[in-house]
Length: 70
Image (cartoon, rainbow, N blue to C red; front, side):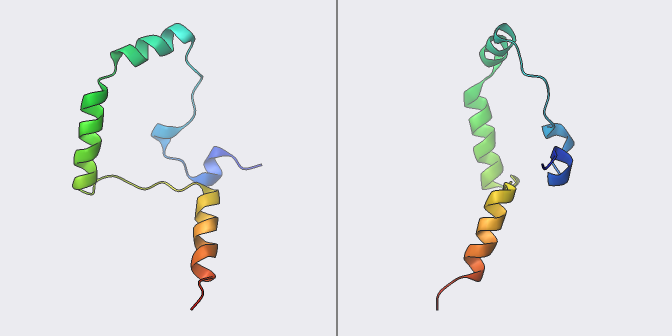
């Protein structure tokens, strides 16, 4: 079984305890989705975002590139 450490997950993305329903609702109500989406678009335009592939996606991508038909 793979652990989070074996996938080199950044420290700020480590799993934490799930929020309770009231905590989750409070967190969702405190978010400004418009501002978050606008910031995401700005980062993508500035190419400041990062692409994160799961191990399964990485393996599939490698095998697809190696099996191309000419």
